[in-house]
Image 1 (cartoon, rainbow, N blue to C red):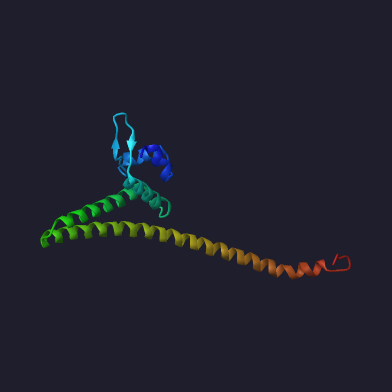
Image 2: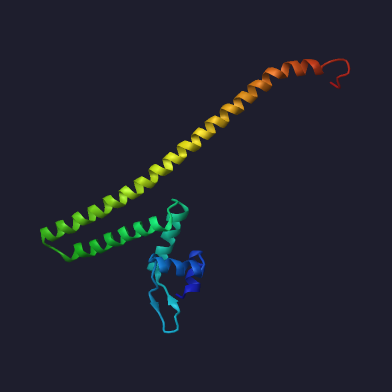
Length: 158
């Protein structure tokens, strides 16, 4: 599919797709001599993954690049694993896969820790605001019997 079709399908602009290409996040499957870019379903899925990592999980494009590179390497290692029957080669491939996965886990855990820290700050703000509101409610409650008593009388509409 051409770049315009891809952009409409995944809900981004053509400019965004070109920018993703500049960053190495996606690649046109082919480009004709006139410069028209064409994409396949793999690249569609990749852009949708980028959007998910950005929108749902809050990763920036540098973090997304790191994630995609790790996932690409893991996919390559799966292919290599299928090509080897000998235990030493399989062990080496699996060990590399584990290293890549651990690095990715550490990156994501770091992001989660920063998000948890921010959430803690929001919780503190809510607690402070709630305490101020409770104090205001208590002040109003203490003042309201006097106000109510002063407003009740012969000229009261009730």
